[in-house]
Length: 333
Ligand SMILES: [Zn+2]
Image (cartoon, rainbow, N blue to C red; front, side):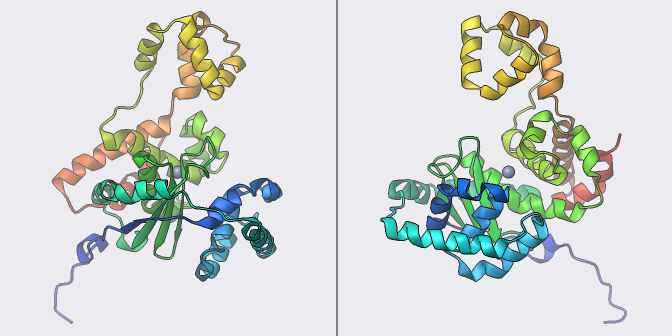
């Protein structure tokens, strides 16, 4: 109406974010495809295969999943044919025997949904996300037999449903996977505004070795990990001094034990030609700068701290607004 004073409402003001309805469940399709991954190695994208396999149990998602692959995975050319192959071998798998879901693990999650709900509610309240991006229902599936050793979890968000695959008992990983629903849409909107080169320049070597040159995947992971692994639980980022302290109290036996348990660490030290704790101690700074230092993580941690302070003064501000205001600073020289 003319003459009326209009004030734009933010999404958060006009519509409260609903906490998703949670349930514990099982997707046979994901259990099936896990054992079949080597047969699709030439596709070069496990995530695409998992997404296509989901269609076995959710044919209603056909349009969304095919368009997701087209949009985000243009290197996967013949998604239709791949899906046909998956369908055929699934039929054979089903005929070959019964495949019982791990009922005790599903019940574990069913019993612990209130705790998970609390973590999700806290996360939503911190970020103040756009309600449209938050699924109305989430199924949590025990991933103990599905997740590869180096995978913490997996998640899929299609329409208003989320599927989170996490190891039984691992709330941190479940929260990590839920954070993808909040963070991915935010960075998607920043596409083109931040140079991927700059992201890669700031990021630590560990994430780069996991995600290669995909700057936006690294940015998502870094925003999620910094919040999930440190900020949310009031933990400080590990410093060089922390590392110095930890190695000071170590002996050679403990050192070799760590090397046998952590193949990645062992590989890094071999690359540096470090074999003993004694040698390691003399080159600690070099190791830290090479492998542990992560400028992007430091900047993001500061960003969350700044957001926390801003939120105290202005509880209605969303993380998205704050990020947009500070994104240039985040990636400045
Ligand atoms: Zn992740």
